[in-house]
Image (cartoon, rainbow over all chains, first blue to last red; front, side, top):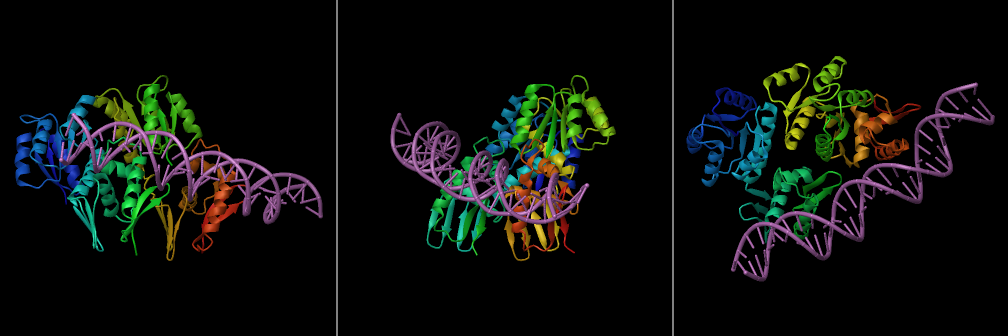
Length: 224
Length: 224
DNA sequence: ATAAAAGTTCATGTTTAGTTCATAGAACTT
DNA sequence: AAGTTCTATGAACTAAACATGAACTTTTAT
């Protein structure tokens, strides 16, 4: 199960958020300011953090920046009372992954949390093994009995994603969201191009195949 | 295919919202005030309505209240420039399901729309199971004990629609509206052609049959 | 600072899906 | 039974989705 740290100085909001997260089955830890949060992070594994931007002592943006520079890479969901574009930009540049404006809709929060965790899990499963083939995220390589294929990052991520759930059809949009990021604006054809290059490089691989599902997207299918 | 009515007097905001909704695959109708909205509602099936609270003639809250008392029960997402709790309360008590404060973040809007549709259970019917046969919307496939039949989108949608309510007779117009979209202008014979092709592909399927009801339309009937 | 590699965009060609239309055939009417 | 209306169907046509080569931009490494 996932550990979520809720960092918010307003007791009511914190309890409310915690309540909904627990109801959903998450393990919740909490802190009422940045310093407390740092202590919790020191002693627990945290999968995702939700933090308010306005807090006494260490505020949310500062906290985020500190964490990132300390090497923490869990997703961070920011809560803010302000609504300007500036805030959005500030938040993202300091390392925030997503943000919500008060008043918070609990369903929306749960949606965002689950989306962030889903996206983050890509990075945490570091290896896929299939038949006599291994994909290693750390080195961006695909290794078979007789060869080691080193792939460019995007191509590797794309392949990794597809193979993480063979048979599941991914739409171009899903792939863009999960590999390029939820705020990516790129042309969907970009996905096609990466698929094409992958297929070229994978011609000698027997273990699986990337299949186009017209009208929907792409999927990887294991060979019989 | 979901029909969403966007009711907003500011042309720019209306276009912006419509654009993002269409990009996401929704079918969009619009109105620039409450009276226009009522007319649209009168003549189309609407799955969800997005409406501004401040509008000339009939405002959003009044519109909502009217609709509810007229028996309409689709989810309503309110847009408001104000931020007070009073407004929130007013909105909810008049029958609004969710609300957003201007300026609207388009990602947030799409999240809310999809959450509302999901909650309304409209979006949840992604699968039909019958006897030893399964129809899966996510892959456009019909699976039986011994075969997996991959269908083109329109054919699949048509079959899915018919099987979603076996025995119900759908007119060609209803099918066009709900699958092609309310503004489709295609020839009604198009439906016939898809039906024909479906029948060809389904000859070996025992579970049901597509029956012509002369003068009315088509229906799917389960085999005894 | 420069070259190489990676990533993106765009225009074009191909394939598949979807639509239209004309004609044949079935079912209802009187 | 003949006429009328509605449906079935093959085939031609149009549109949409995908593949691909190549130019262009960004990032990375030296």
